[in-house]
Length: 201
Image 1 (cartoon, rainbow, N blue to C red):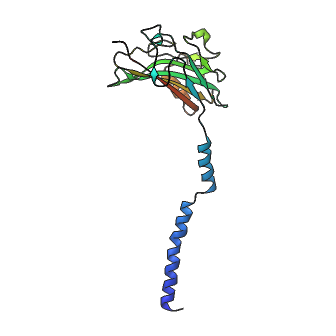
Image 2 (cartoon, rainbow, N blue to C red):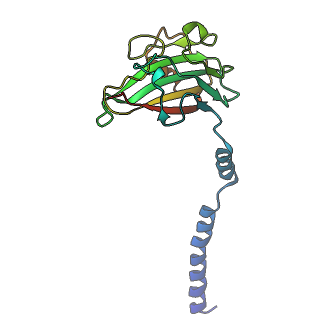
Image 3 (cartoon, one colour):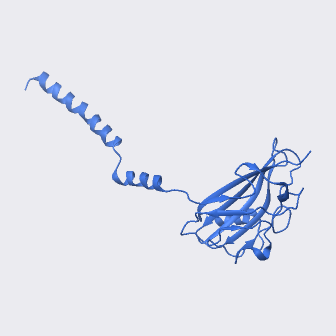
């Protein structure tokens, strides 16, 4: 082999190495592809609805401080098979003024709702809550539902339902943050229904 031929052969081998390296990087491993497909196949099934208002629609006056201040009817479906309990939190992130929000006002906290339950009737009383359901304390400093009562502007009210893989201990009338802390690492699925309300001016 001549010197020129040897140089050409070495150059060809060196040029080929990056090509194989690039191909190896571009072709994902089988486990990686399986993980991607598994994530794509995972469908969130939990849904939360109300016959009183549609998602991002106006909440009827009857459910506010300007009306009877009774809780809206809520229904849910698609609770995961491995759920052990449900949590419902209703809060308003636009307080006190949507143009300059400073805090999230908590309107309702329920936890340890049994996964067999599929909703709550309008104006649900403590005695009507599903068996074993426990209540937290809202920012009205009481248990139970407290309806929209925005001082100014149109606020959003987030009705958040969480499916947990555990039953929480009795937290003794906790605040929202106490319940949320206990749910960390245990949320299987979640759903949200947003309603809006503005006081008559």
